[in-house]
Length: 414
Image (tube, rainbow, N blue to C red):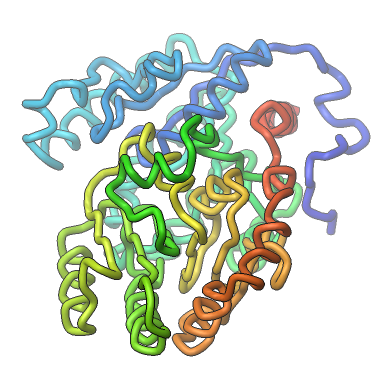
């Protein structure tokens, strides 16, 4: 059996060596706008490489002008209504109707003028047990379109009514599959029986990588954080797999055991399901945490504010129970901050315990508390800060990623 292709070098006889200059017509397809920052970055980078990339993605419902601010025009089909406040208030039923209309239009478009590649990212309906998206991909494939799917997660994090066999259908339908790390690629091959020749490893790129021009002190002033406290930050979409409940419990332990003086502050920032927000708020109250040592910013954080939060922090936190790929971590690495994170396989290429990070066993409240206490010690924090200076060098940049993704496209076309 052939080894999983890492795309750093093209295998003998690959399509790349036959047509190295071929510009490709690509549909970058994220029909529910689940990964707007990733698809925007990849679309822009591929376009700079000379490929004709159509962003088949509606405007981001939480930040409707985001794509246009990046110089991109979303073309999801006939309609793109997320830019209108009235549509956003209508909720999931309206979004489903828009999706069905756009899918019908895309089917007709694929029949008349199919692209070379349909690069697909998320199956939101498949998570709920519907196979509409698989039928659309099958329609396009029957018309000669090559399907490339990025495996952002092997299976959904949420406990919806999906069945793993449906994801086997998705993975078998694709002509090529992209994983972001070796572990995910191995799991995909082993657990879903996917031929390794169809699995390609292309790293995730940095998101929100622009460090703000203002100082850390000014960033804290803008966010209403004290300048003289140690600030720990957990930033991102709220979800049970992020381990924020364990973080709150460990944080309460830290506050109880901290010596007298200015207390550290934990900032948890991001939006998520109402039930998750309520659960975390109730847990914080039961643990006796107050605004003096905890800030819960449960709201959508605009892309322009993410650098402010990252730069204002002293330590970044990723206490996940599990993960396939973390764009949040790759974003955080750009800011050269010490990191406390769970020791998970996707983090191995970026985090080195005792150098740029402190790693703990997933779900271990005691180890997380020890890591937080260690980061409170000035000498230890200074050592971690020095070790974090080269963090951005660990991340592949988007131009390189686009080149490697184009290699995957050519392999699918070969």
